[in-house]
Figure 1 (cartoon, rainbow, N blue to C red):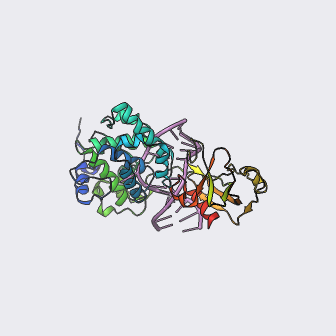
Figure 2: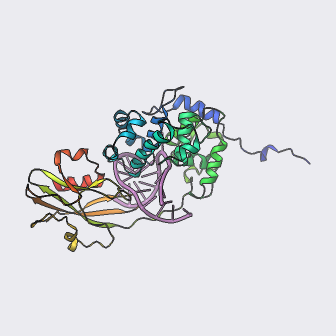
Figure 3: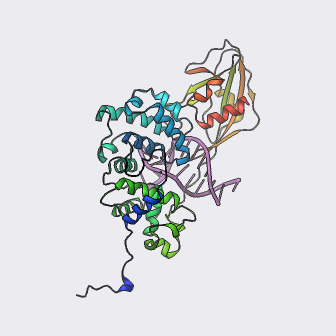
Length: 361
DNA sequence: CACTCGTGGTC
DNA sequence: TGACCAAGAGT
């Protein structure tokens, strides 16, 4: 049998990870959690950065990362700290289950692993808040384990390199296989960060800078000229508007009434002003039925306009009511009075900061 | 698999 | 200006 392959039908050369590593050595970004070339960031710091970077931009994470590392220099310190302190420091960063899992993970690392992150993918994957991506990222970046983390950047790079036609998320297994096929025999941590830097700076969602890409000559989508069409994605449907009421109670001594949200679910365990449920059929005419009970007669003033906010899966419009109460007014069960000057330090999600700004302006 | 879960920046 | 996107995990 003739096994010769004619040049015209020869497959394109495979992407060479060594070329990517050489590109990385010249163009790697300087980031707060990234050690200088040839050095390793401590596993705790790698883990902290990876949790914060989940679905969150590098720019946004920067200040939070520095603050956390300063306030909790070790995993033991974080594990010892009350969850509420962690939530206050996390306020504004979003996806608050990450903060709850971060704290739970710190405790688990102390209890299960003596305060040292395990250099083992399965053990990492078993910790709270660590999924496939983060286990591979910490394993590779902190320990150079043979693992390829696949995030949105890597999905984009790989789907273009190989022109993966299947839509996300169905294409994830294939993209993971293809990504793993590129893994170099060493420097897996640098390779992981190189793929992400490439996706963030060259292989961008729109107008990728292909001429500067180390994979330029081997990228199938680039050869076809339809790079921007990858990765293919299923259209996502939009959430319906929900409405609700928020109640800002201002006591004569300059304090505001706050309470805690339920531990799970939307904005779980975070602080809020009292309010109604948020629903599609909210009726502003009966909104005051949800007002906090303060004893005696309370005169509610409905503010003009609404506070709007957009969550990932639905937009929200809140009608804000304000009331002034005497200094002697007691807080309802589960609520507490907080000085206006102390509001910045509270575990208030941004939607609640918008409400307070609207009411206290 | 489909859905929940925040926020800020970009074009 | 609204839709998309950002180092995803849990259920």
